[in-house]
Amino acid sequence: MTPSVSPEVGTIVHFEHVNFRIPDHRLAHLYFCMGLGLTRDPTRMVGIENMWVNAGRQQFHLPIGPPSPFRGEVGVVVPDLDAVAQRLAEAKGEFDGTLFSCTREGETLRTTTPWGHPVRVHPFGLLPGRNPQAIPYVELWVAQGTAPGIGAFYRDVIGCPVELAPANGTPSAAVTVGPHHVFRFVERPDGGAVPHRNHVAVYLTRYHATYEALSRLGCIMEEDEREQFRFHHIKDPDTGRMLFSFEHEMRSIYHPDFGKPLVNRVPVPWRVD
Image 1: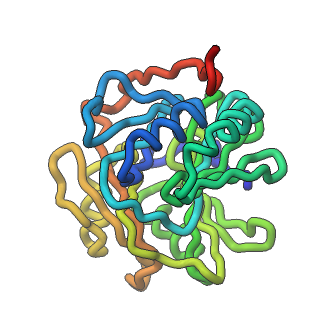
Image 2: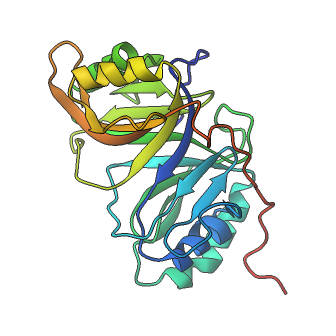
Image 3: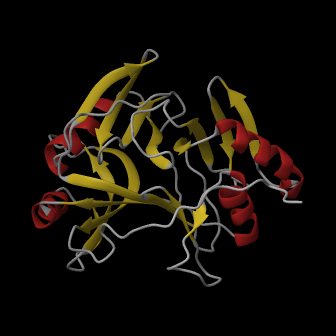
């Protein structure tokens, strides 16, 4: 699925990371680094309780904890899709007894992490964007009839460009959260919020104004800590009706991690003789 991307950027200027709780860093290294070809960040979180994995200018954050997949998928761009398919095939035996899967679907790979998190892998050049490694979108499956209200929430409350459009006949809202990056909310019969501990992190301008607007709607999850707050509830800005729930880590561009350089290696074969 190709996410729409607005040529404008609004209040959210950079989508930085997706956070998945997982129970095993060895399998995470096999899947994200050896398989997908991404890079464990060598400068931060190098202990045994958390690991950060770089994907171009973005990251997966993988703290130790009970996993809880969600309805939807995370998109990943790689420079060589065939190489990823080969490495994951060679690593398949390491994932026996887990929820790992990998199948070719058209020009993409549809995979799940060993704990069931859906990840769709795209070859560089298939989607808009100039980075050969990236996390271009997070797609979330929402209840039918909610996409227009979710789009209005991001447009009117947060200040993001939004495209409302059918995706293969299915209503959806594509929210621009940085150059060539979107959060996509797709209506499905099985869509809707489910309890999970995953979250996304973004950087924004209009930090205090955005906090106040979300606070008035009763969406705040963690209070303002001067450079960061969190919200989870997504509500109709006109009626206040709850439409969806997904945790957002909202960071000021004054946050010390804004614009930090990330190391990205050249992926190597799974087996080296």
